[in-house]
Length: 450
Image (tube, rainbow, N blue to C red):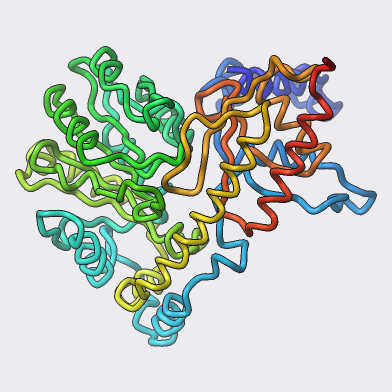
């Protein structure tokens, strides 16, 4: 991968620098090398070297700054999904009041339970049960430190010698980073842009074998902005049942849908195949910093429990960090008191932003959007580098864009798709228009002369 090559090249240069005098003396005086350290071939040479945060940090470092280390222009962050930075996505007062009340009650100052506070688990079970046929219980819910920890727990629990897992391409790179740390083999199945980024189920069948333990499905789609219909979700469930693996349903963007296809949880099809649902309050309530997520077992036939996977998840949680107890304590009021009007307002804002994004992209010949976004806060666009004079790939495009225009866009190579870009539209509409206009000016500046 181009991105990994760039990272490895920087690390190789650092390793090539001579030892300083003190280090030389220690090397000479010591009778043998220290017993700790990372093998040279392991340094930055795995998928764990690529994360959204790591790529964004590199891009931000490329922004032009003045002598006081301040950006010379307003930075337009359309590379990652954090709506909380913008007033139009302000957290509802009901959620803020719930946290304040929980904190001041002095009832949530102690350690949490392994699975989370019973009151939080019950509230999450009731909240999610509204959309699935099988009523969820407290025992089905495991509260986590955001959805990132939910991913960590699931991947760790699934890992075993020789096992492999199927991830979507493009997808969310943290899955790969965690799988690399757990020595779990990753196989990528394709999504089909021209078919609304649906799963290529024939590719799934070709990739899987008797050691395939799970398939990750992200719906609504990050990074594609896709929303799967009932027929496609049922086909996914039937394929997973046929191939005998669990479906991990990443539904962080649940209900953030603004096209013609409504959101349907994968748990609706739990009678066909066991489903592990991952979710959080981060996006729908605009509070990623509150770090509250969950793992939910949609398993009416008890397959996950009989297989021992549920117990393994609990074992992983036993040795991990707990979510903050007063945030857990606020969950019942937060979920119960936040109004439908608030959710509808957020979806309307995202829909307006998606329309702006799509229309602006259509006016730029250098980038192409094969499918209008219908959900989440992202869209994937194809970069036509053949129209550019001095840019060879998506990573170079994003680095120069950050430097010249102070616009941050995620290169597709970080998500498994070279010469694509991921754009988020979960920002103030005026800023979004400004950012897309800067991209258009940038493309014109670097276009090949006719």
